[in-house]
Image: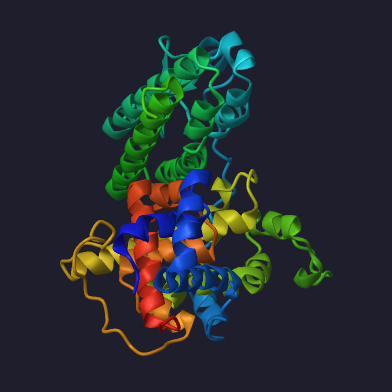
Length: 238
Length: 183
């Protein structure tokens, strides 16, 4: 029999997330409780076995032929210039400045992102964002479309949120707060990749509303994460 | 361009990617031979449906062919490809859920679901396939593939806390389905 009151601690324990004091208490309990001990062992075994599962499963042999048939109907696009952008040196310096040097950990996890992320730009520029920040436009001579303006607006919001992260980091040299904030970083990287890919797809299919919706969703998630990082960095959310 | 005199199997991945960028179908085939097993395995484990997994493999490699221009080389090609796979699998599952007029059970970890009846014992692979969608996706991405909760959250649109809760739920369901050796 297991004890429900120990379940949360057991989950954290097998995950390696239990703090030392709690861990000692749990181990003491496990010493005298065969049910919970068995549960812990079984969960640990599942985790180990899952990690050892073969990553590769051979697909059916006919699959490549199906792909080849599809290729015949879908010639490759002309080579596409990779997406580049945006928050390059001027903005980065404006936001971070000397604070990043002082807050040693921050530069490691945020600065590299700034020139990795972004949306292809072509036309309209905005003085308020500086010359490095431009908005998506499929036609450099035309006005930005409605979706481009919407995405521009989201992009600006994300810049503001990133600024808040920097401000928070500049005000705190608390290593624990930095570590908490940096946990958001892998998810931000993933979102930036998704934003890049979707923006590139939109460049090829500018009237695809599904892509615009997807891109908007990615930006909204990015904004949530940045706000979370800002709170973590400023210490307002332990 | 992949040289006609060289077998694509002799080329390294960077050369194959260059071949792909120039529209060389043999480069795509070589990359397929290198990565299809992993893409299929990931698609199969995420969807628990072999025919869906086949569709995912097909779509992912066609996307790679069409959208190689968006691959900037900052991550490994395999990382980019597997992320396409996860995105494609999650999209498929969302569409399937919508077709059934059910939400993908990411948020429903605390209510009864369509879990299958507990069986005496199963192997781990079968037990994973029997998990509810939300729990299975998180378990596969976290415990099998090594993604972090924050990455899972970003990919699937759930909160990191929900991802953790789904993971614990998945492990307990697996533990029940794999049998209970303890007294």
